[in-house]
Length: 245
Image 1 (tube, helix red, strand yellow):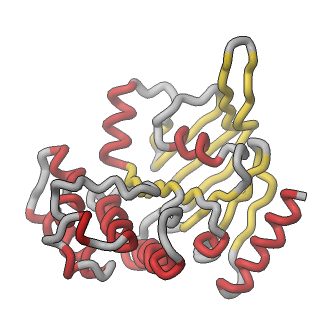
Image 2 (spheres, rainbow, N blue to C red; image 1 turned 30 degrees about the vertical axis):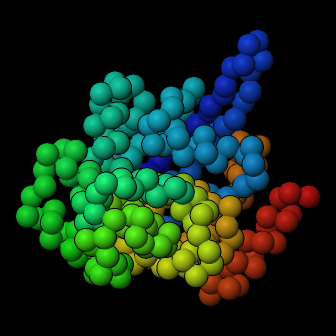
């Protein structure tokens, strides 16, 4: 589904060039839930921004669902991003003046395609994620965890090839964090969703199928979940401690 090959990205400040990504290689299979972790400055956000088409990369290839993003025009990238990628942000990014149901349908509203199928999918998603009771409420009237579950529903309304999540539990307490991560799990199991998540939270990452550890713009290690969630989190914490020593 997602293939990243020999990805390089740098920034220029005056005469100084900062290399942020150094030949990143990995892939994410359809229906896989993968997290990226690493210390500040490791390149997590830059990697996500390259994959989401928000910033150009220097060298390498990114392919999503068979489409090579290199060489695409700005309008082609915008169209691809709007129709083929679902986004979940740390700050929810819900529109205050719209109900939760309207917020979930926003990607379809933007495209002028609020069909009966879209409305049925919105209803299905809210039932699946346990937020059917807040459909007619506004963002200011619901909890942070409910906002983020609504954001996950919104990310799925276009049946995207992949969901990109940027620190989705960063503003939540532990109970809400678990509810949101379990929502991703439901999307994966019930809708075969492919999810790529940047996180600093080992608890959230322990729900994933695989975790990629980044250090100084390179992949330090990849860990696959081979046992229960608690044991996987222990392995992650040990690997992170080793990486930062």
